[in-house]
Image (tube, helix red, strand yellow):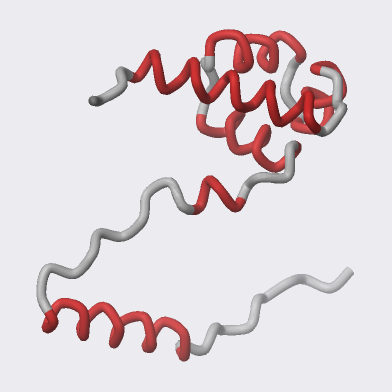
Length: 106
């Protein structure tokens, strides 16, 4: 059975609240930690309504940002050839040398 966007958002809001309560943090403190307004935090918990930025900030404030990284995994390979191409690309990206950053010294 598929859930609607409204149902998913409401569930997410409940999970944000549950995590916050488990950590013993007030809504006001969580909002401050996340850098969002108290009103935004309340709406996020109550209705599950938040921007992607606010949700990301909440995840960081509640120490569960790793979960966001797994939301949209890469699709599985459909064939052995495709799997080998994915592995080759991953190896190339891993060994790619980054150019040094050009920070100005003060």
